[in-house]
Amino acid sequence: MDTQDTDLIRNLSLFHGMSQKHFGALMKAARLENFARGTVLIREGQMPAFLHIVIKGTVELFANHDGKESTLDLIEPVATFILAAVIRDEMYLKSARSFTPTQILMIPAAAVRNVFSRDAAFARSIVNELASRYRGIVRSLKNERMRSSAERLAAWIRDEERRQGHRGYVELKYGKRLLASTLGMTPENLSRTLSLLSAHGAGCEGRQITITDRQALAAFARPNPLIDS
Amino acid sequence: MDTQDTDLIRNLSLFHGMSQKHFGALMKAARLENFARGTVLIREGQMPAFLHIVIKGTVELFANHDGKESTLDLIEPVATFILAAVIRDEMYLKSARSFTPTQILMIPAAAVRNVFSRDAAFARSIVNELASRYRGIVRSLKNERMRSSAERLAAWIRDEERRQGHRGYVELKYGKRLLASTLGMTPENLSRTLSLLSAHGAGCEGRQITITDRQALAAFARPNPLIDS
DNA sequence: CGTGGGGTTGATACAGTTCAAGATACGTGG
DNA sequence: CCACGTATCTTGAACTGTATCAACCCCACG
Image (tube, rainbow over all chains, first blue to last red; front, side, top):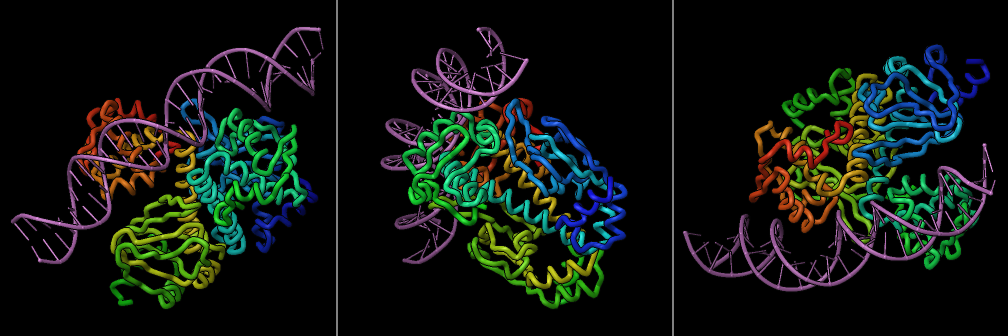
């Protein structure tokens, strides 16, 4: 790993504030690797060997059960994944694959646990990241339990439009199949629901969803700051 | 808080290994309180003031949205709740009420964050607890996404029977309404599904569910170590 | 050009909710 | 200890949401 990469990583919030010595120990053990689109990075059921940090590209976290598959999360730079498994040294509950070409920083699990005990700033970063993800998944569970798929979609459109900079439309960054899986619905259902939303303030053409009536969409989505991000 | 209580708390895994000085600081700030059944302990949307630790009784974590209510977790001694909100100092995403009379240890959030930074052993306990809960909720999300309500119920019966000591039956510790809400289904649906299960190895009479055919129940539940606990 | 994957649309089936009515259990006060 | 009132549980019927299966369209890419 060259010094340019190291500098970039040093500035990630996860490593901010930790001692140079401990950071060096992590980096010495770490590997920075590139993966082609579609590569399976980890498989559920395996034991964790590395903490993974997405530097470039998008990683899809998913799980399989009884022939079904579901997308649980999409990880974009810069964020860790499978942190909880590494901390507890227990098997992965999710699988991960690179959805685009990706660059991943891989730090051996033992090194992470080791430095965690010695460096309070690093410990704080780790626990902050973990708490943040915990809250994210609580929101997901509430979203799943208390909203219909149509409401989830409408809420997602509002959220995503905001994240993309309040431009009045959403540019889909990936296919509708993946979006459907992310929202916990089938592609067919997504397709139908999208056309249904034309009567509630959002229209879809190809990969662009346009918000035509903010008020109507909000009324339909029933936004909730304790669910939406 | 008397010394007997303090001793009991000192032995909780959360405080195990931390320095006496830091433990003292936490206890000095902490309060041990008793609540009647049904008391709302925290309300979603509020900012965290205390880390709560259930010493006695059962606490129900739930959330409301658009007129609906859903039980997200049942906390039994000894365990923390709303840890993530305390760590991040962000509003609660869940509400909590005492489901039975409870005794709760309440440690001011600021004290927790403070000691976390100074005591590595405490930090490790906190992060372990948090990671453990994170994994629990990942399992819940997978359970919700990839199983039908009948499968969830069957899997729950198997799990619970094991937790209660492999006696071949499950003693319901609370009403079926709450069980239904925990499993993300309506009471009516639970009732019907329970009678359906009589054809798949589990019968219900009053507050006791008896496993009549382990093999058949397993075949129906499709158990998965990456979902079930 | 074909060919294949993603997307849409339609028909059908199933799962789950809702509403309503009855049955059963349960705690309380007489 | 019983009677009552209330909450819980069960059952039925109708309805809504979502999945499934199948056909078709469209466009990108060989």
